[in-house]
Image 1 (cartoon, rainbow, N blue to C red):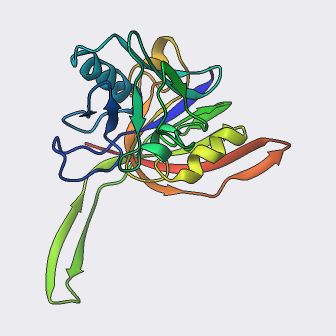
Image 2 (cartoon, rainbow, N blue to C red):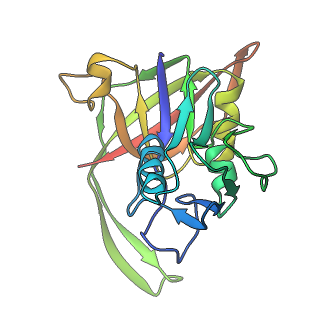
Length: 227
């Protein structure tokens, strides 16, 4: 696989805010599972599985398929009922109606939290240290603001389903990880000696997708990595 991008889920470790951190079932037991802190989408799937297994009602699988580009939830033993909570449907791709009993159910849509790519170009890191004055609360407060991070100018190439995932919104804001490949040095972080490594940071800007040819799109992103 030439590259991919994943978003980090939100989580504060409680049920106070239902965003994109939770997976809920109502049968064979009623339960909601979630990571205790923000996690990458792929890590979150593993956390959901571990916590579902701990319920003691069967062995679960919560997995993303690179072939179908869909998430599947399944279990052994008694059937289960999946329940949409928060933004689970758009985050994981379960945009179809839920509520029946399943031994296995695959999402109808690609997850909004991940896009598999045709290719990625990552420009060398640029220094983006700055100091400026900022006004808050309609000018009633003034503070000095420091910024200390490096930025990467990236160009991503993908098919229609990658653009569909991008348009959900999770890959255009907040923290993401962009891989330039799926093996070797691409699995470790970018540094001057490993320019092919992944970039893990916060989206500063994201340009609109531009169709280069039939079903092939490209778009630019600016990703900031704190130091």
